[in-house]
Length: 103
Image (cartoon, rainbow, N blue to C red; front, side, top):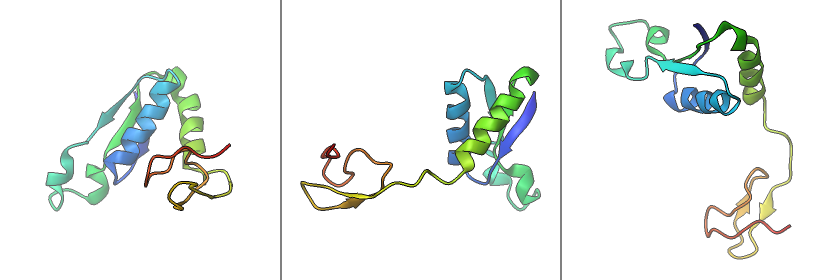
């Protein structure tokens, strides 16, 4: 096993795990509950980590993690036709009222 990703945020580590598992790459998380040890250990020693189980998957996993960390592709925000909320391009449904993005 080899560590592929570490972050102060358990949510980011979980997100990366979901991306890798969706691509068929087996992985495990570690240190997800060590926040209570803060102060006793160096800060980065308690950060949650994502480990790839098989060495053969590591290069592909590294590529997927790098792609996920890039800025999202540019797009145009849109205005909800029902409530007028302005939403970013990656959303297809209004978070305010639930209306679908017009096509």
